[in-house]
Image (cartoon, rainbow, N blue to C red):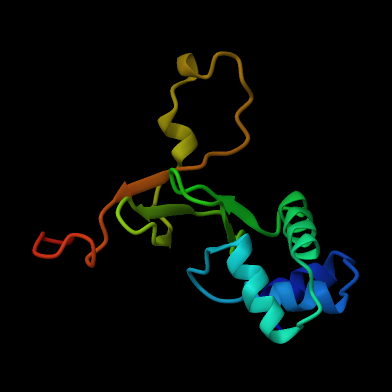
Length: 142
């Protein structure tokens, strides 16, 4: 059983065949699929699953905090099942490839008190942008 399915069961989420197949499609490291990609892969496993069901399931997973929506400038939203532990993303500005990254340090500490404008900050989302090795051949990669 996938990690996502285990987390959903632990939360008491009813696992229907449609929910199971969406969770299985999202399983893996560095998985950042669009809703249409999730639907296409889910339909290969469960042909009767509708696009509306996939969108509803994805929305529910995001609301639960078990899947994160990731934006890649001008591209369709992608869904990241690796919401635990929280992490940042590295996005290729060329092809849109997304990788999970886990920088060290406390990003909340980087925001000085004077720049918080009275907000009680509860989270930080950082997206690093650049070119992946396939989109920037010949450039040094470090």
